[in-house]
Amino acid sequence: MRVREQRGVADDIVVGDCAAAMNYLKSLANSNGKVGIIGGCSGGRHTFLVACRVTGFSAAVDCWGGNIVPQSDPTPKTPVPPVNYTKDLSCPLLGLFGNDDQNPTPDKVNQLEAELKRFGKTYEFHRYDGAGHAFWSYDRPAYRPQQAMDAWEKAFDFFARHLQG
Image 1 (cartoon, rainbow, N blue to C red):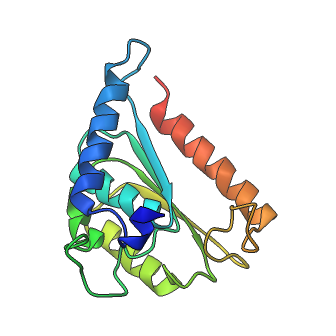
Image 2: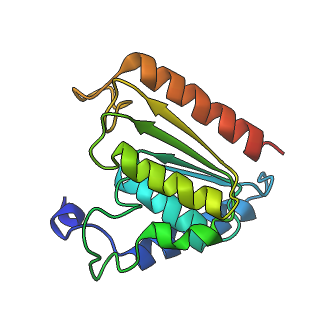
């Protein structure tokens, strides 16, 4: 709650924490050397940001990450829109989005997809009609079981393809 009151965590802290976590996981004796990253909402934004700024991840799943293509001005904690780092994306990306979402809107998803295409990145996007933000959060009114189950299957399949040794 404190972090939310402080308007989130600074991008540089998120990047550093995720890089450290990745390195730790890769150092484990039972690691195959492949690590994925996933997040929803601001965590989806962080997923994209980290996959662009940290090399070494093998797959990234962005679940309706808002403000990758910004809807507002940068802040001291979020000084560079993640979309500006698209050229540096270093692993395959799966994007899961609801077509009724307001952040990211379908237009913002289109803008992100255009940047991924422009830089020749490996990605796949799945967009769901009748779904908005956080559509697989079963404890919220936004939950859409059919779309959620399909999206979960796509995420598991994506990680299986990119993370198995």
